Image (cartoon, rainbow, N blue to C red; front, side):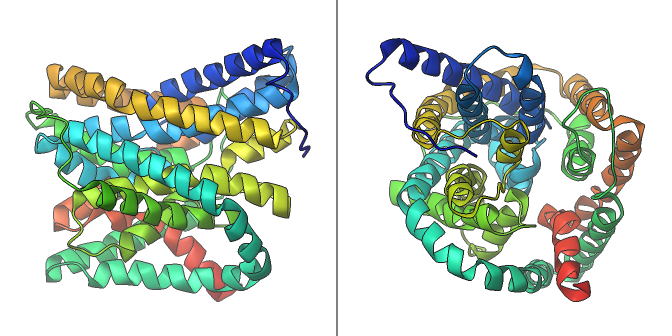
Amino acid sequence: MEVIGVRILADPESAALALAFVGGGIALGTVSGLTPGLHVNTVAVIMASLAPTIPAPPHLLGASMLSAGVTHSFLDVVPTLAIGVPDAAMAVSALPGHRLVMGGRGREALRISAVGSASAIATAAVLGIPVTYVMRSVVTTLDSWIPAAIGAIALFLVVTEHGYRATVGGALSLGASGLLGIAFLDVTTGGLVPGGDTLLPLLSGLFGIPILVHAYGGAGVPPQGGPTVAASSEETLGWGMVGALSGSLVAYLPGVSAAVAAAMAFSVLPTTSGDRAFVATVSGVNTSNTIFALFALVALGTPRTGVLVAIERAELPVNLPLVLASIVIAAAVSFVLVPVLGDRYLSLVGSVDPRRLSVAVALLLAVLVGLFTGVPGIGILGIASAVGLFPVHFGARRVHLMGVLLVPIALRGIVG
């Protein structure tokens, strides 16, 4: 890792070049964020593999990758809302967000998500240094109790289901998805394109395919109402801050991914918070760890996000002032892109026959899984898709399917 000064203000040519790379990262993050099921880590690995062939200053490539990551974290809510197919970090919010869309409140949900992400960026920027200072002294202690805490959260989510049937369904969903995680999370897969891991088929199967199966027999996305946000600005900003604080755990604690942090945030929100709160909070989780992870990388020397891991493997220097500026620029642009592109995305999806759309997106997911994880990934996708149908059958919440990550982490604390 290398942290160097930036002389952009004194050198307009360098400033223009830096902005061009940041703009390129925003463009890539936009494409990846709007592609159902595609995770930003996959894009980062591809970019890192191409880095040696690009004749450009290495620190600009790193800034471009981080810009792509931030943009993706804003825009991946769009396919989650419009189609119901999330990437890893947005999986918990898939059903609450989709309910808002089916109720004609998709445009509102887009704006809630954008505000939640922006609030999280601001929170992380302000708290990044003090939180990192505190975490340096307590990270070992926290890491030791995280498995127990996650196990308790998983059980809490089950026992707070409404009704015996839903509780049984939640337990079965948690257990079955947990077994999938134990069996497949560490499986090595290889496809034609680098950057894939088994989270892609697991989460596409658990959260994506079941919604597409349900949508196949539905009436499609209904006409959407206006963009007015029913929640107050203070509430929405507060939900984003809760997400930011939960997302900070990703930066400091090994084994805690954005998806796990989202499930933790989900568990601390009151059940009366409603779907809007979940969308804003999970969006905050998804976005905030970009900044927290940067501070953690500088202070602890350990990359905690997929994008930073890809940057370090490619031996790209981290120019801290430049990447922080890149993150702010990407966040500002993405804040505008979410409603502008999201409204059009919803309109387009609403105009397509739901059966054709469901089949097309399912095929796209299968193609992506095959390209990045090969034949084993296709098999995992099929098994995970079957397990993903459990919650709907029992009338339980789909958050229990996060057992695919929660159970292996909880068991880590038991077996050491």
